[in-house]
Each structure stands twice: as structure tokens, then as C-alpha cells.
Length: 569
Image (tube, one colour):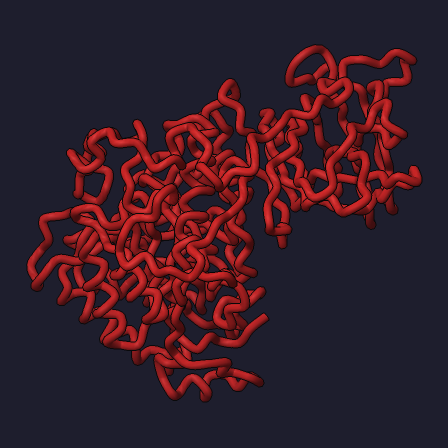
């Protein structure tokens, strides 16, 4: 945990009268991400600590987020800089340098001034309209491209609020720390039954709630009301979704821009409110977490620029300003890009080897290889003991419950259903039998593996993995993923990437574990060996499968939290 960050401290010298915390100031109020070199510039950043900021109880935190990479955001940064305030800018790497969008130099100027650079997919893609493999490419490769340019990316914003359960899993699997949608918080346009603020920490860090996107006709009083309603409620987090500005003080021609004068007046009113316990912070400063290694969508390696700045020119193969193959293909975005259409700017020219369905020359260490699992659909039970052949039920720790071989299958006739009725510790897991090789697949040291399965649960479930060494000993507590999203009534597919296998590993066992009171149903496991990577994951997370035959994102079951979310980002 960290005290209020230096960017918040710069807002007012009177913050110390609000709360006195040891080690309050770690560095200067302005930080600078250097161009990428031999050491990734996002490593060891003091201002991007591993934990969220320590926020005094009752504080009102205001975060301004700007999406879509539009060129007038350079002016937005200047207005914020005037008051020593910082915002979060969600960038689409495929737009950098194009007409109407920010240049790389402009984005670097924002970062140098202390603003957070987040991700918004490579091409501002509606994730609910594309297949899972395309969605993963848009999410993972945007973060990887931005990080190759030197930006320590931890935050994501869903374009058009396309925040389905599967999209959230993909964001987690691409090593983000948080993601915001649009909607779910009371605002001048409505949602009167919604809460007045997001909680600190957010109830779901990968579905952070906001008011509807700010419109050009919102008055200064209406903008101020977003802050005042949080202060009146005793504090909380107000994350304001914006897009850009237009010159002067009149209403803008773009629905999602606001006049420069109105933004200036809002910040002039807001900056002194530190004395009331109201602070402006970036998304990362609120949520926290380490800057995790970048992951290409195909599991390939991650090249850097060997210390050479890009100087505003597109990165070959990193999507930074190079048109996408067949994604936009010169077709306008039908008004969904905050009023700036893409017409004619893509011209159907393919990407330099990243999104055109072809592995990047020199950046991919091989296509993922499917490793055959024994009895992956859990159908075979030759001895009639209700445990699938080549799989083992394990009951670890202190808990009580039971197991069923159930006909509630995803495919075929059978699935496995653990249940926990009381819980103190441990889990109930189904894993590949940990033998000498008749069931457990052979494995390659130094490689990571992607395991996926279809599941339903009303509790906490996570993937687990173990490995065998040449002496025959199994390391059964090697690795486990975080909890997957709950889905009590419909099958969803989750996946997790293991850390690289350590030297001496000869075989691997994977499975799924129930680790809380409730039930889980599991079926149809798949294991893939990924290309080699120089990074060992600092955290391993779930994501849906790279399966063109699988469901499209909009087929995933929506959660109740999605009901108020909007499509206007």
C-alpha cells in the first residue's frame, strides 16, 4: 500500500493537514517514461507501485479518463497541466499518427507531464462484434505495442462499453490490472437508481463503473454535481468518462467534446477542493498493482526498440500508426468514434505483420501447439468409480462437501461437479493423474502452457498446475491462477497461462479447483504449449480460449452489473 501519490500531493500544500503519512513524498511531481531500451522503461517505476494508494477514509477521488486517441487531447493535457492535475488517457495504438489522432510525440508529452497512458484496443474495436481470437489480438497486442513504445500500461477501457464476461476474462489474461466500462453511476442524464460513486477499491476492478460519457451540452453545474454527489455521500470514487475538447466556450459540434473554457472552469473549481478531502488521481493510482509483463496475443516474445526513440514514426509490426489488415479497411465507424469517422484512413493496407493473421517476423517464438490431454471431455470411466480415466479428484485442506459425475455436460454425456458445504482452507480439484507419463503429458522446461476448460460456478474456481521431475517426484503446489468469474447457470470458457516450467520438469498436470463454499461443474479441457518468452509472469490470470469455433463474445452471459452500462465510448 502507498500513501497519496506525488501527483495528488502537487495539487495542494494543505494535503498534509488532511492526513499525515510516513514517507508521503517518494519523488518529483513529474515523471518521465524514457524511450524503450535494453531495460524496459516500465520496470522499477516508483510511481507505479504494487499496491493501491492509501486513501484517507471519507475522501472523494475524482479520475478524468479520455478515450479514442483524438488529436485535441493534446490540448486537454495542457489544461490539466495548468492546475497540476493528472488524467488517464486510453490509447488505441493503431490510430497513433493518423489524421485526426494524436502523434507519438504528443502522447509522450502527456506521459512526461505525469498523465497515465492506458489501452483502448488496437483499432477501437467493439469487442462484442468480433470472434474471441480477434478480440484477444485487439486487447493484448494494443498493450504490448504501447509498452514497446515505453508506456507502463496497467489500465484498459472497453470500446463501446463492450464489457461482456468473456471480454473481461480476455483483459485479465492480457495482464491488465483494471478496466472501466461506461455507465452504472448516477449522472445528469439519468440512472437515478444507480449509486452515486464507485467504491474504493472498486467492487470489480475489471468492470469499474462510471457516469454516462460527458456530453457537449452539459453545464458547468452539471459537471460539478458529479463531484458534489460523492462528497455529500461521504466519499467514494468518481471516474468521469470524457473524449476531448473544442475551442472556445460555445457548444461543440461533436457530441462527446466539451468546450475548453468549461473544462478549464471545472478544473479551476476542483483543484482547491483538496482542503475538503477531494483529490484528482489517475486510474492506476486508485487501483494500483505491478506493471506486469506484456503479452502478445499468440504468446510470442516481446521485442524492444533497443533504445532508439520512435520520434513520432510508426513501429513496424507494433501497430503504432500502421493500418490494420481488414479490420477497418477504410470503412467509417458509423459515428461511434466520438464523432471522428475512420473513413479513408485505413485504405485496406495490411499491418506490418502483426494483425494480418500472420506471425510477426522475428517476434513470435512459434505458434501454440495443442498438447493432447487424456480423456479431455471426461467421458471415459472404465472402472465405474465415477472418476474419469486419467483424472484424479483431490480434496485438499480443511473443507467438507462431495463430488458427482453429472450429466450436466458441456459436450458429450458427462462432466464433474465438486461441491463444498463448509470451508476453512484448501480446495477440491480435478487434475490430470500425476503418474510417470501414461496420463500426464510430457512437458518442456522454460515453456508456458495455456490450459482452458468450460465451467459453471457460483463460487471461487481457479486453474491449477503441477509438474514432475526426472526422479519421479511431483511438485503439486507449483502454480495456481486467480479466481475465474462466476457463472452459475451457463457454461463459460476460461483459460490461464502458467509460468514457464522450471529446469528439470519432465511432465505437467493441470486441472480446475473449487476453493470456496458452493459448486462447480467442469468439462472439456484443452492444453497448449506456448512459444518461449523472456518474461516470467508476475501474475497468471484467466482468459477465454483462442478458438475460432467457440462462442463469439456477445454470446457470453451478461452479469446484472452490465444492465446500466452504455455503448457510447
